[in-house]
Image 1: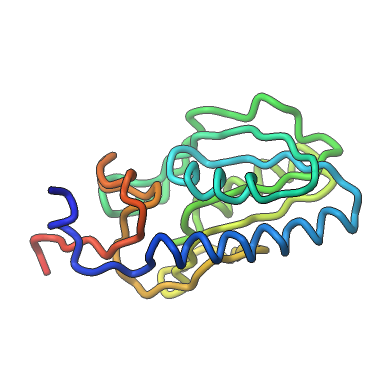
Image 2: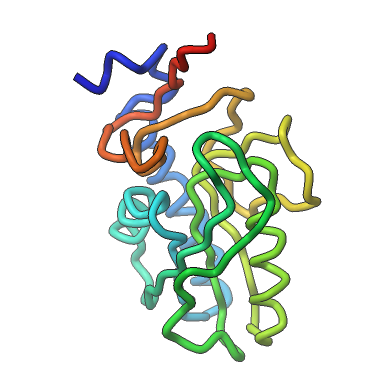
Length: 179
């Protein structure tokens, strides 16, 4: 059973769902006000459950796209950001909402934001489910943030350890053998 590797549940499925509803309303208000139709860009693979929960609650038109960006090896951010799959849609003169599972060191999003900004979008915003500011190296923050969490390695709700645990319906603190 994979739940045996979880030290404790940090955020329950219900807490996540409730916060997604709040974030979706906040995002909706911002885009309704501007009249823009954003491209919601999910960063694969971790953001998929979060992005799905958000967009099903939007009452405004949006388009979706995905990117695959890598900067992790196991539990450690290696700082080397690689684009494995780029967007299919053009950013030029469009509103972009990047959806991320977690901002940790910030290196991935910092470099991604720089790259996407060079493509001349109308606007570029970031929505993250989790923020871990104690580990921040790059100067970046989300425009929309679900939860600020402590410096613990978390899995579940799309987040993984070597591709495992993504399917957990909650976010748990992973109990490593070194603790």
